[in-house]
Every structure is written in structure tokens, then in C-alpha cells.
Length: 410
Length: 79
Image: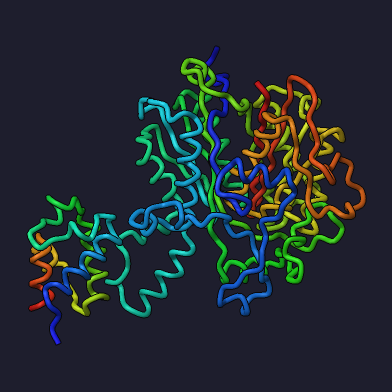
């Protein structure tokens, strides 16, 4: 077997989301169709047109010791919590650090730190700043901290591609193992961007829902009444491992991380190319990398952010790349959009759908948009039948980044 | 009115605990920050910044490096 055909499997999962402080509580909430979106009460809320978001269900300050938490941006706190869960879930194996990598990014980085440090600098002067201000605001901070924690020396990377970040990091982790640079990689994405400036900026881009009177109903991918995305926060991180390494230590295997496809639209800095070719080609590239056929793919966790234009373009791309048989869900209807964390948590949901053979339903899908020719999961979660199944997680980001990650049952 | 050694010690204990997790009760005058309390140089910067807020006394970097023990800090603040 050549190095670039090494099979990669998923042996650990970790997450903290608006639905729960770990993977089990988040997954159970998704299957129950619960919403993690709530009205905000911060003092800046009157200054922005969007007054709700998916705040993390468990505040990281409740999980981390205070001396550790104060040196970490909130996005890094989420990442470290999720990485620890994933590593424990993988059995916290003994491994040569030279064969362990980290790929964890954030779409924006430590924006909360930047804003509060700027206020402190203006009000009290430079010498009141924490000596940790720089590692708190840098978007590669999470990757660095996780590498220190685990002794990972095969490389710590932080892909940054807006809302495709988490998926791109998992893709890069797959590539690290397939190319022989590591035996295990801790990979995923994180984000903590619920702040007035970010809500204002995304609202200025006319990208956000303003359904302020019904926050839990605001994220409604593929529904006729959708009016924009809903901001969420949190992290999703997986442990990737060569199958050989996982089998040798008797690890529990959730699924194979079979392949990844990347494309760029080269069209518009925020808008999707209306012909959907970028998303379609990312899915086709993932299938090729995974050496599977469109007919093998039974399920797609769509990027579907609930924006008026994006969801229908993606549905057409799925139809063209995979076919109308694909069972499609859109879990942002319950978590909101975790930006750089989205591809991490949604890859976990895709993996669990294969492992548990069940796909969560899309919440708030009362009246599907016209012309959607894929199988949207409505009402109740849908069981998956069959032995050998494949599924795809799509993640697209401002900048024109398209990432599709393919997973298969083992 | 100048603070007493006990008041400063209590304040320092709170700061050191907040920043490093070392129990406040272990912050006693004879302890060395580096050798006894396992506090690194960046944490000392954090402690100096917090002490500025708590006691209203600025500790310049060139002074900070000479403050080896808890008692040294107490003396600096009282001076």
C-alpha cells in the first residue's frame, strides 16, 4: 500500500456547542430537535439589529480552572475543552509525539481578546495588557495550546478559511496521515465571536436573520421563510488516526475519514457562485479522494446556513454531484452557525449519523423552498439502512472556499 | 494610610491564586516566586499588572526582576 493510500479513521470526538457541553448532550439534543438559540441580554444588544445567537450551553469558565482560562481567548477555551474530550474519547493513547499532529483553526481568531485588549490599552495604557494578549488573539493559538498539552510535534497547523475552517482543518489532518507525516492528528475548528461588532458586521453584509421575536425559529435552512444565518459559538474536534495505528492499539473506530475535496469559487468575496460549481466540484473531488461513487453516498450534512441564496444553490450542487437520493440534513437549524467551528461540529454529526445509522431532522423546515430535488429530512430523524455507507459534510466560507469531507462506515 | 504587611499579603495571596492557582495560604513572606511557588516570568508580569490595580503601585520591569520573594514585593509596595 503506498503512503498516499493509507486509510484514515476517526477514533475520538469532542465538542462544546450551543446544544451541550459535550458530544453526547449535543447529539441527543439534535435528535430531539431542540434549539440552542436564545435572546441575548448583553448591554450592547440595543446597538445591533440582531438580538439573538447560539451561546455555548456550558460556559467554558465552568469547565476550566481560572488560572488556565484567563490565559486563553474564549475560542481557545472551547478548542482546548473539545480537544481534551476527543483525546479522552480516543483512549488518551501513548504515542510518539513526533507522530502526532494538530490542525485546529478559527475563522476569526481571538476577536474578543482584540476588542477588550484595545479598550484596556486605550483606557489604562500598554502596561496593563496581559502578557498573553498576543497568543490569545492569534488564530493559531488553539493549535499551539493543544500541541503543548498533548506533546504533539509532527506539526501544529491552523487553516483559516472563514466558515469552511473546521472542515478544512479536518481535511488537512487527513492529508497529514495519508501522506505519512503523522499517525494521529487532532483536528477541527473553534469560534467565539458573539460580540456586538461581529453581529453588526455580518448584519452590514446583509447575511443575518433578524427574526428577533422568534429566535428559536430563526435558523431555517431550505425553508421559504429563511432570512439569514444565526450566529453560534463553540468547537468541534476529532481524533484522526491511520487505520493501522488504530487497529494495533484496539481503538474504537467511529468511521473512516475517507477523503476530502477542496475548491475555490474565484467569483465573489462573500457570495456563492450561483451555478454552484465550486460546491459540486468539492464534493466530486472528495469522492475521488475517497475512491467512492456518488451512489455510495447516502447522506449529506449540508453547509446550509439559512441565507436566502446559499441553500438552494447548495441543494442543486448536491443533486448534481451526488444525486436526488441523498438524505440531507442541516444541523445549523439547531446549533446556529459556528463559523470556524461549524465544519468541526458538523463533521462530528456526519460521523455519528453513520455510526448510529440515524440522521437528525432539519428544524424549522415548515415550507421547503421550491425546486429542491434532494431528500430533506423533515419532522423526525431518519434511519440509515445498509452495511457500507458513505456521507459527506459540506462547509463553504467567505472568500469562496468550498470543502467537502467524505466519511464511510467501517 | 499605608497598608499593613498582613493586608498586602492577603491581597497578594488572592492575586497569585487567581493567576496561578497556587492556594493563597501558601503565599507567605519567605516564599520565592520561582523556586517555591513555581511561577514563571510571564506570570510575574501578570502579578505585577494585577498588583498595580490592587495596591495602586506601579512595579517597573527593571524593579520586577529584583523582587524574588513575597516579602520583597511587600517591601516594595510599602516603600
